[in-house]
Amino acid sequence: MSLPRSYLQSTFGGLRRPHVLRQDLLASLVVFLVALPLCVGVAVASGVPAELGLVTGIVGGLVVGFLPGSSLQVSGPAAGLTVLVFEAVQEFGLGMLGAIVLLAGTLQIGLGLLRCGRWFRAISGSVVQGMLAGIGLVLIFGQLYTMAGAQQPRSGLGKLLGVPGLVVDAVRSPGMATGAAIGLGTIAVLVLWPRVPARLRVVPAPLAAVALATGVTAALGADVAHVTVRGLTEAIRPPGLDDLAALGGVAALGTAIAFTLIASAESLFSAAAVDRMHNGPRTHYDKELVAQGVGNSLCGLLGALPMTAVIVRSSANVAAGATTSLSRILHGAWLLLFTALLPVAIGAIPLAALAGVLVHAGCKLVPVRQIGPLLRRDRGEALILGATAVAIVTTNLFEGVILGVVLAVAKSAWDTSHIHVDVREKDSGHLVVAMSGTATFLRLPRVLETLEALPKDRPIELDLSGVSHLDLACQTALEGWALQHNQAGCEPVRLTSGGTAVPAPRPRNAGLPGTAGRPVTDAVPESLGATGPDTGRG
Image 1 (cartoon, rainbow, N blue to C red):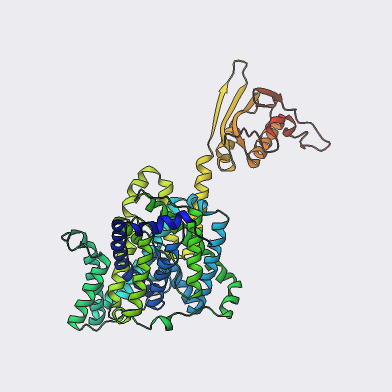
Image 2 (image 1 turned 120 degrees about the vertical axis):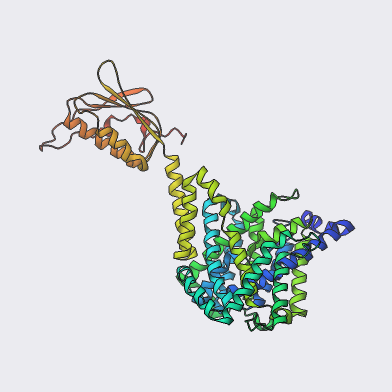
């Protein structure tokens, strides 16, 4: 994919302006310091070598950073995919991870070329928040086990139910208590860091927390687990032919699709958030989707973690004063230099400290502050958020998101289906039943209750002129009610549409006792069509 000259000019034109170059250089260092512990932590939490998280961060900077889409958004391994990656590694093995990520990247490229980027913005915000909340909860409960040095259960529900026993074991075991103390101390630093003097806050909170935890662990000689370092050449494992062939399986294909949808949605939602933080060029969603797909395809070929655009690193980039894509490109270069020159430094980090960082990140994914206002504004949306989160914890990520989408669609259908039934009596003694709004099967029970309660010995006029849409289920039900009314009473039902009243015929004997005569649809004006009056207003 060739890069437009205008994009290259906006990216590298700043090299001619020393102040822009200086600002982007400083911003890249800030993003690098934020990304370093997160890349390692996400990889460890996903059950893969720490270097693979750094590889994904490097690709996100040196490859995706060059591509058009969003100029200030930073890509890399994300906590939001940790749960899904961990499940995939447990089910298929580390060798298959690269093949699944490769397929997900290819699908993202296809979606971007088909201009599907904007459709990801149509996903209900409650579903996305519920997805992030569920991921955050599973991440929190899972990393509690890592902090204590215990083996975590595979299922989210198992992680949750095992927490009381984990606390008891940590109290009884000095080694587990030490790891828990390191993790809790890391979380405390992250929480309190915004309150320290401004000159200290130059160091990003994740880096400061991990560095302090590493220094305290080394000074005390604490016997806790550390990050295992293998080196880039040993950690990178491109997928083999057998792994690629296994992508034809239903389970592997479903996992790749889940990677595609969740990574794409998270990236584009992050892009929308980042655009609100700066006054620079807006994100081109289709190009950004292609860029993410190219990055994930390369990560798949290297056997690394999947990537998304990440809001923490992106917001740090904007806050540091970045103005062009040069900052995110350089952050990838710093990650590469660190991984190549100082791999031993990674091995000094205690796992409990990284677990503390991820517990803190998981807490940020749970929208605690938004739940109250959402409940007051729209309880249905709050229900969708909660149901999605609970489903992810109790089942898995894919099924939880599917449930959330189904609930969101059902709520939307319910909200748009408004029908008002007004019964009034005319001077002549007959009843007029005026229906207005959108008549769908969701409102059918209420409509039928009103109609069936009407007296059967009086003429009735059913006025449908105010109905903007009448679905097949409602039309069939109204026909059935009118036919039964005509059979039981002495006066027929008249259907009115557009101000024209057409009398429905009385039922006639077709040769068998109790059989109906001509159906009531014969009395429906042609303006109703096959599915009822649809004026386009609904």
